[in-house]
Image (spheres, helix red, strand yellow):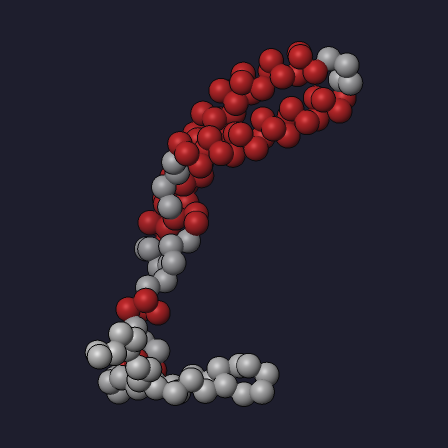
Length: 122
């Protein structure tokens, strides 16, 4: 009768605590660049957050946080008038979103001008 379960290629090694120790690298030998850690992923630096162009999504999320803080502050200060405070939430959101976006645009352009003036040394 043919065997239905494939046999294990390597022995499972474990100690008394149940920790399985790995055998290490068994494939091809790493190149000199891989040994030094100079892979493509290691070379690529993450982009500075200030150098990314502003987006409406980030501005909306920031406005949402500001509107929620305003909502909580209004609920604490105006104890019994929660309906009034809740009505102002969408207006605050609609007002804070473009303010946040255009302030980000202004800061981004100012930073880009500064970097261009320095010669893009960063």
